[in-house]
Length: 170
Image 1 (cartoon, rainbow, N blue to C red):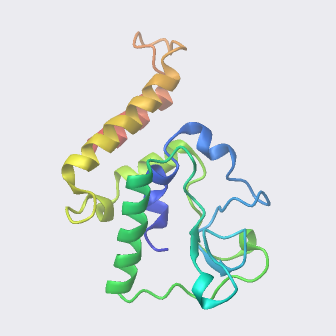
Image 2 (image 1 turned 180 degrees about the vertical axis):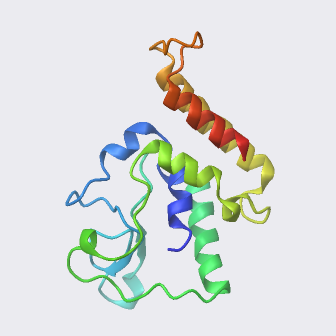
C-alpha cells in the first residue's frame, strides 16, 4: 500500500481511466485495504481459505497487464521485505478512511510515477522498461493536447508541456 500512489500512472495509464475514480463509485481513491469491501484499493474476499484471494482494484482495462502485475508484485515484495504494516482493514466506507489519497488525475499520477525512486530501482522495472513506459505515457499526454494550439507555436497546451517536461526529466 505504501507504494501504490507511485504506481497509479502505470495502473491507470490513460486520461480516461480517471473518470471512474470518484467517491461512492466503487472505484478506489485511497491506498487502503479491507475484507469484502468494494470501496478500497486492495480487497480480500471472504469465504473458505481455498477460494480466498486479493483483488487489486486500481488497475483498469487499459493497463498493460504485465506492467500492472509487475508493480503490484514489486509493491507486495517491498512491503514484506520492509515489514510495513498495512494497518487495520477498513470496515464501512473506504472513501472516508484516513489512508493516503491516490492521484486523482492523469497528470498527478504521471508526476508521482515519474518521481518514483521505488519504480526506477533496477530490480523492479529496470531503466529500459522505465524509460519506455515514460515515453509512452508522455506521448499520450502530448497527443491528447496537440489538437488545440496554446499560442506558443507548438500546438501543446501549457499543462501538457509542463507534464511532459516533468515526466521526462526523471
